[in-house]
Every structure is written in C-alpha cells, then in structure tokens.
Length: 383
Image 1 (cartoon, rainbow, N blue to C red):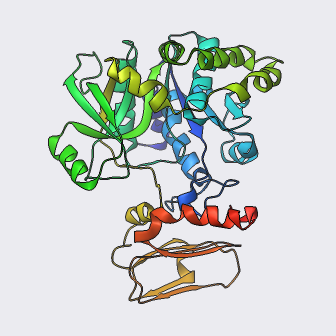
Image 2 (image 1 turned 30 degrees about the vertical axis):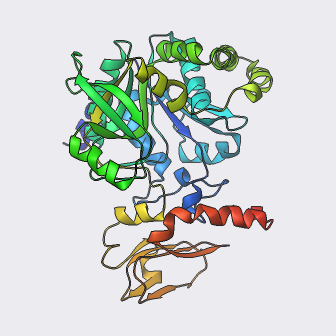
Image 3 (image 1 turned 60 degrees about the vertical axis):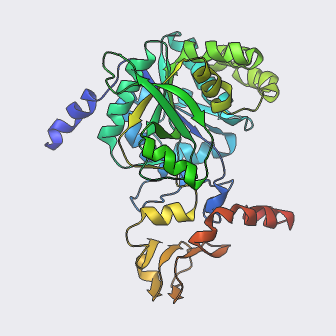
C-alpha cells in the first residue's frame, strides 16, 4: 500500500453510525511509582512504541469511529494532559467528571450525550484507555461484528480468546451461536464469572466455552440507558438530565446539581450481569493479543527478553544487567544516572525522579500496598 492509498484504507474501516467511548480513569497503583493519581498509566508509554497507552487507543479507534465520534471520559485533573496527548479530540467530546463515580456513570454519561445528540439508535463501544492490543485489523473485525450484533438490540461484549488459565481476569461463559448478519462469530452469553483460582481457570480454558472479560461493551445508546433505567432508574435519569444540558450553557450547573448524588457502580454489576442472566447479552470472540497491563509482572511478560535477561523500558544504555532477569524502568531524568542489576532473577526496578521501587515479578500484585503505606505516612506527594 502506498502513502496515497492510506487515507482510502482508513476510510474503508469506518463503521457507519458507530461512536467510540474511552473511559480514562484509575491510578494504576500496581504500576507505582511510574503510574500515580496525577499521571495514571494511560498517560505513559509502557510498550516502547513512542505513544502512550491513551494515544495508542486513539490510533486504534479513530479509523473505526472517526474523530467526530470519539468521546473520552476522564477526571478534571487530567484534562490538560489528555488535551496535550490528543490534540485531535473535539472539545465537546471530552467529558470531564467532577469526581470518580465508577464505570457505569462514565460510560452512561457518554451514552446519554450520544442519545441526546443523535438519538437512541446510535451505537457506542466502550474501550479502556490503558489496554494493549497487538492486532488492529482483528480488533476492527471484532468491533464491526459487535456493532452488527448491537443493532439487533443486544448488549455485546468482546471476549478475549484465552492464551492460558489466567487468574487475574474475570471470564465470560458462552452458550450457543447467534444468527446475526454481519456477525458470524457472535455467541449468546450464559454468565459472567468472577476471577477463578488456577484449577478452575484451567478447566475454563480447556472447555472452550469461556473467554476473558476485557470490559469491552458495544450497545445502542437507547438500549443501554433503557436497561439502566430498569436496574437503577435514578442513575439513568440523572445522566440524561446532565446530557440534556451538556452542549449548552447549563452543563456545569447540571453537573454540580446531579453528579455528586449518582450511585457508584461498575457497568458489569449494573448492566452486564443482570442483563446476561435475562438472556440479553452476546459476546464476539476477540482473536487478537490483549493485556490490561495490570502490574509490573504483566508488563515484563510483554517486553521481549525479560525471561532471559533484564528488559529495559526507557534508556537502554543507562541499564546494565549481569546474571539477572526481569524488568528495569529507567526514568529518573537525572543526567548520567545508571542502574545496575547483578545476580537477581525476575527483578523489577522502577527508577523515577522522586521514588525508587525494587521488587520481584512474584510480588508485583502487592505493589499497590506500598501506595497505601506511603499515604499513611503522609506522603501524598508520592501517590
């Protein structure tokens, strides 16, 4: 494909009537001290690509939805950083939350704004800002099938085909296939399952009926808000009240009056689980590499060579590893500073301007405990 062909190729991937919603929240405390409340993981380049996770998410979704139909929901504290990272983001499509109210309020607000602008038939897909996906073409195919399925009135999730019996993810159990034009791989969802133990996860994978729950949902705006009104009518009504004022001068007043009273709940508990129990959720298998980069161990697994040497994120020339394996993040910003690791297997070293973490991949899940411990010592500047 020549450079002249590229715009046509991008246009060919556009999904008519589809809007992408990117919830960008959380502090990513298991990736401390790089990820913090003021600079969460979605603002960092964790793959060495030269693009932050947020920018990579934009790059993946913009060809499918178009800039006019790409909405981002984040906290007010991150507004400047998001605008700097995504200059193409339309001003009215940056939805700033006054406070965190969990994923249902964030995604529901975007759905209500879309419903108010374009009507209840508008289809939206929600995709986290901090996930890594390694095959954009396969991802685009899954989204296209999910949109086709959502147009039949289903709530649709994209379930990741497991590569092993992971215990850090929830699972989706599928039932029989659906007959949806344009979505040959769509399946009925039987239930959502919480994170299992290792033996249970192995059984799930062996059965072929389970997929990882990546928190990707595709659904008509009216369908989503209709289900929400059945489950939590005050939340649905409040989001619609805010959305009605969103593009006018009353936005701030509506947010101030309504937002603080909205219930905090995840979309899985508010919509996915009860609607699946009633037979209203479908899943499209995602045949692409995916990771939510939940901790330093998962990041090390993504970087080439971490099992046989010290893999480096940052300045490779500033790190020396001898008889060692694992991961070093070199980001202190101090000119001439080096990191040396000798004889330590599966090490994790994260060097930042004001905090140094030394641990192992085995203990990566416990890193968030350090955040609470420093906060208890009054060091809010570190978290």
